[in-house]
Each structure stands twice: as C-alpha cells, then as structure tokens.
Image (cartoon, rainbow, N blue to C red; front, top):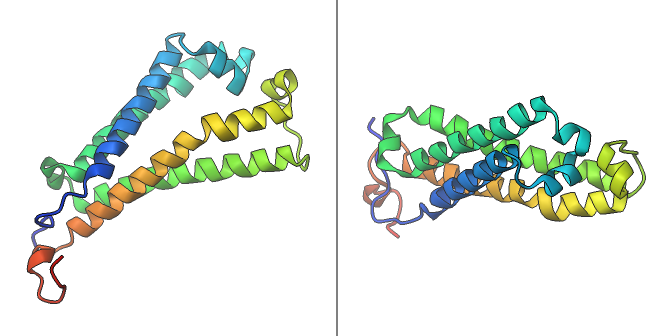
Length: 180
C-alpha cells in the first residue's frame, strides 16, 4: 500500500521545533569544542576532563555532529522528501532519539537525586570543587532540561509522522474515521 500524509493538517510544528532544538544543541557543542563556554564545561565535567583532546573530539564535536544529523531526521519526519526513506527506518530512528534523550534525563535525575540525598557519593572533579548541592542544582536546572525538551519534541514528531503515514488512504478519506 502507498503511504499518504494526512490532508489538511498542520501539526508539523514539533518537527521544525525538534530540528531547531537539534541544530542549536549541536552548534552549542561545536562552539564549546572550539573553546567557547569554558565556564559551563568546567562546571559540568571539571577542568581536567574539559581540557582533554578526547573529550573535545568525541564529547563535543561528536555530539555536535550527531545533533546535526538528528536535525535532518526531524526534517525528514515532516517534509515530503522524507517519504522516500523507508517508513520503518524513520520510525526506529525517531523513537530511538526520543528514548535516548529521555533515558539520559531520567538517569541523570536519578543519580543527581541520590547524590543530593547523600545516598550515593559522586567523586567527580566538579563535586569536589563546587560541592554537591551546587552541582546538583546546576545539572537539574541548566544541563538536563534541554535533553528532556529534545526527547519530548522527537517523541511528538515521531508520533505525528507515524499517524500521518499509516498505510492506506488519507485519514480524511477513511470511512471508518470521522473527519476532523
């Protein structure tokens, strides 16, 4: 059967927002890799790690590249040219990005909550330098919310794509479903 988008609906805003989020997040990582935002990086991972070549090459430039690819994925989920890519591939990629971002956020919040409650002890350089309370607040309110936002945008975009591209006639012409 031929996949056809839902006619007359303009609910692709989440895809454009996910693309914008991914590009902004990717460019922020490239900027940090080029030497910008050193204060933020040091507070997040520590001076020793932030100045390492591996961290910069993989952690910052690698993440930046992956984010730019994710931006392309978000556009493929909402643009007509995305229909040339196999539907299942786009669905797996979209749900995977959303899941990775959600799992990252949930894991970080769990670790930070346990560290904040003194259940576990984190012995990272920022913890020793700035103290647990400062690092927990910094991560909870600055570093983790963008991951949560990205996960929500990719989940919404992928769900919309999944509904839009169901096999068969357009939803507005499906006799089993009322028109909206």
